[in-house]
Image 1 (cartoon, rainbow, N blue to C red):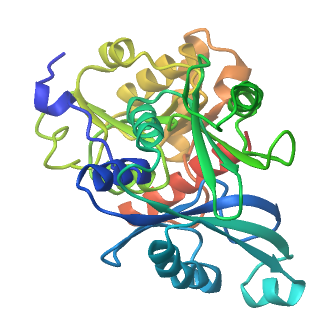
Image 2: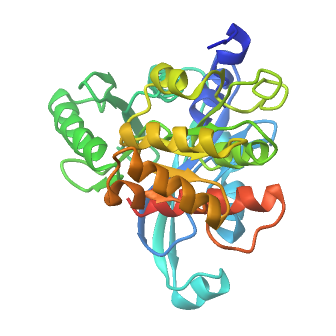
Length: 354
């Protein structure tokens, strides 16, 4: 195995929390918008966030469309007043249809000022946990009109920030632990009006093979929230010039890479290598590691051959059936970019199906 420090060094994308920390350290202000409650069908993801800086530039989104336009309109008022506002969007069936949704729902968006002296330790804790892949929960407590208190609760129970009441802190920390366990936000009316959002590590995606298809695949997978590692035994292919946005690039043989990367049950493994034998080895190692997802590119003939070889190596029919091959959702893909789209679509399908 060969690996130089530049190739192995993780490249971290700046999260919204990281953006806020940088903004605070620079002595600048902004406005953060995020869902406080969601019911029914609404065009806002449960982990959506939008940062509006005081110069008018933005990072992130809360879904776009009319809802985001209203948030942006209110952001300047919140920045000027220095007080948070909770916007209530009650989408009727007609409004939902106009937005392209199947049914209506209700969504509350909390729009709050951020800047120096405002929950700096909480944002720092959230940013650090995201960057290092440690689970943490963000807790937002509504107090008097326009008042917000924040906490960050780590998986080990450590609390940063406070609601202002020690007993309430403990009660909210217990709720945060439950949110981390089930992986979904929680809305509370008692013992306080609060929103708890679990912030979990990005699922790891290991792309074996650094050829042409891997380039758009790594790019798209990173955009949709995977922590991307690209592996190939050829340094002229597995390098930062070809994969500048990957979290990690490793030059290694297949077996060495699985040992080095400690692929486990939460891992997604995609094999797009240059040969049948190498694809077979990637799939065999992934099945042995009990990876959550195992996918292999190839023609039907190649797939049938590799499946038979896996059975000869002692893998059961149930093991072999776990392999997504030919890989990807059938969209009639032809170009490498289209193939990458089909693979990413399947990754999303598996991820969202639990």
